[in-house]
Image (cartoon, rainbow, N blue to C red; front, top):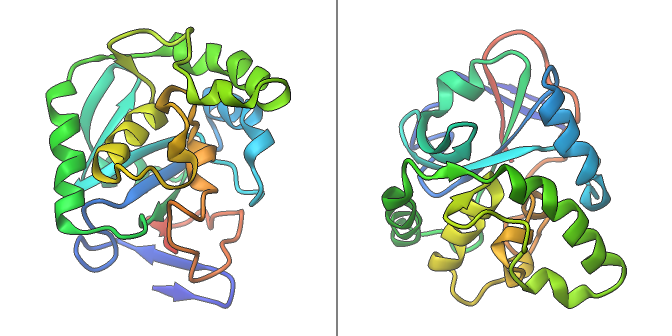
Length: 213
């Protein structure tokens, strides 16, 4: 464990101590053109100056639920993200997270395993959200017409699961899930607990590391 006033890096994180079920992970792959592209067109919501391009739900030791290339799936969180030296991983704990809420999110996503990934949703929503931000703000509360039905992109899946567990819809969860990006969620102080530390933008390249609030 390496600590400073600005950053906390966790090596070989342990479930139940360093990360736990119900947390939302956010990631950014500095070597991925797709990751950089998503961060670029969602940069209008990047108030922290920390780019993120993907998110998912922690469900257990090494496991997460996510919508990624290939569709809605369960993945090895440690092997796929933490152990990848080009990926920066951020963990955020929702306000009011309980075991029951974590289970609610997991139980909502599990029946969706195998559903397709909504490529049109993540791309088309850039235009739809820009209309909503610049011209007609209430559009973000309406279903994104570019989004493929019965398919999901990452933050849409996470947002829908969180709405099931937090029906009062705090913060950006008031928007339709198809209009919520990873960066939208990541920045929301009404949805997540405040950082315990200021998080540096750059990740140390050596070792297996998770940036932990």
